[in-house]
Image 1 (cartoon, rainbow, N blue to C red):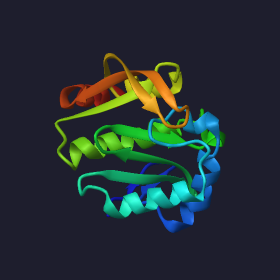
Image 2: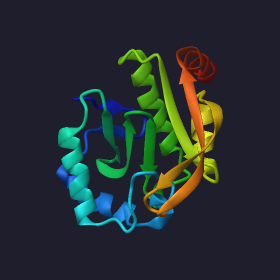
Image 3: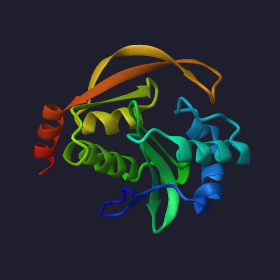
Image 4: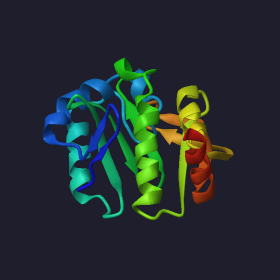
Length: 173
């Protein structure tokens, strides 16, 4: 079981006690609109589907609840690419960067990853800032389906090599 601890956050596997906070946070179009797989509106059946997925996810998929003072404020995952969301009241406080940095560092230092991929909706400047700050490099625009918006949206694809990660880490010291 993976648990990552940062200065302000604990990243741990999602638990049943997180369900209500998850429903409340994701049943907000301001949050779900920036994701690809999360529907809107988001209700109890959607949360149940998420917990079913957790029990069946691939062994190499990492999905962690982002918690502060033991309360869920978001979720971060590393599957085919790095993805995350934060509850709206927790935006703009550096939690996204802190959680993403912990997962990326874990992927390279512990899991032995050779490289990572991510994407962001073109109008999501906060996510762009987080990913570029971690050393991700933009590789090109694409289109992807957003379940919350029920339409194709323009996205930017990114990649992070081990060398770029090491360089970004060195700059932070």
